[in-house]
Amino acid sequence: MVVAFAILAAWELVTAAGVVAFRRPIYNALALVANMLGLAVLFLILNAQFLFAAQVIVYAGAVMVLFVFIIALLNPASDLTLGRAGNEWIYGLVFGVIFAALLGGLLFNRGLTGRQGASTPEAINAVGNVQALGAALYTKFLFPVEVASVLLLIAAVGAVYLAMRRIR
Amino acid sequence: MPPAYLFLLLSGALFTMGAVGFLVRRNPLVVFMCIELMLNAVNLAFAAESRFLNSLDGVVFAFLVITVAAAEVVVGIAIITQVYRAGRQMDVDGLDLMKE
Image (cartoon, rainbow over all chains, first blue to last red; front, side, top):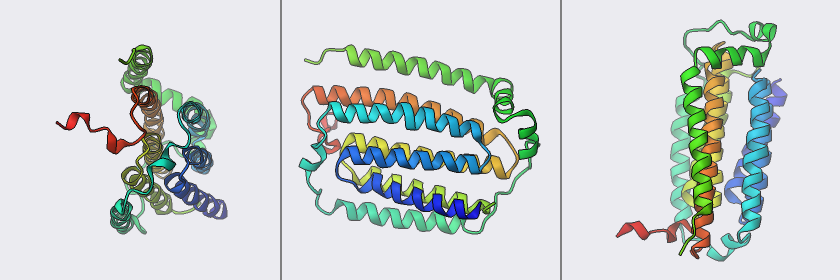
């Protein structure tokens, strides 16, 4: 398990660097697909099988297909024509180092403390991962789920409106 | 099982890389991908919380984050496509019409 985590962590860091650093948007998108698939396997290690499926279907499937489709539709080489924007990236790097140092100092060797719930992996696997999550979604978290469904509807209507609108 | 803080550190590292990309990159599509990277990092932290505190709340929140991210991507890409069709170049620094 530890070896798998080490390999996956390295995979995640490398592909995330690819998302940030590649010059062509299509390579960024492919690196992000690899990143999301690695993250899905990390969810499996964390005993979240439903999140694994949702990550693969929604993110690596639907969202990234949309990205790749739009990149193919628009100009794929557009970022190359922009050129390096002076030395702006140095400020980004300085910010990243400071932010990472703060986060690392905060999180290093610190466990997760808090009230332990009843959903141990054994208890979840006894009823099934999706069943346990569905029971939580439609009882304790019913209102957030309804709000999310309304949000999805609004987003779909908004996207259709934006796509139909004629630009002068 | 690796200790919990390793998952949180990995999540923090991914979030930092996404934030740096968000600040550095100028193509709006790549900026969007960096936002997705940050959302994914937070999802990892939520899933780790769920596993190590024996609670399903983190998984539910990660699921809601995935939902909101999908909605956000749909609207965002529609806007980017419209901006592109209006003849502007693919550069977030060029979109300063609302500055005046």
